[in-house]
Image 1 (cartoon, rainbow, N blue to C red):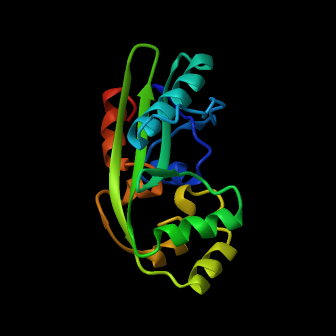
Image 2: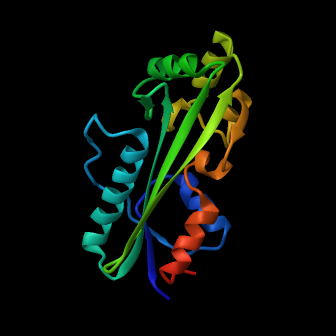
Amino acid sequence: MKRFIVASASPRRRELLSNVGFSFEVIPSDADESCDAELSPVELVRELALRKAKSVLQKNTDAVVLGCDTVVEYGGTVLGKPKSREEAVKMLRMLSGKVHNVHTGVCITDSENTLSFEKTVRVEFYELADEIIEAYVATGECDDKAGAYGIQGRGCLLVKGIEGDYFSVVGLPVAETARALWSFGVK
């Protein structure tokens, strides 16, 4: 069986892969995540997923490596992880009562092949009173999440509906990723 490495520190991605039976090592990527501001959100997540996977593959050429990246996009603006609680409040106010996109890029690579894809999911938020936003931000759940929320946790209370793959919003389109991994011999 091929050695499989996940180039991500995300506990959510690890949990999703474990839940469907994959065994893997975790080696978080140290790839440079600064990108050209001209990239679209879809191009951005594809590029970052590729960089993360390739940076780990360089030191582990005998492995199949999975790299991922997720961003929230509203009105052409990319919302990454908030740098502060104040920024998290600002992001959630921006998304309140609106529809936004969550883009997740996936790259699977080994020493011979590379496969990249992305999924985009439309997410609609309820109108959020300031007291709801502030209470959510106070939980700390927003701290390491693109767009300042986690749909798999208390952030589910903010979400009115989604159009697309729920797991992509969490950070990994599991079914599509599994099929891609199978094509690399990872079972």
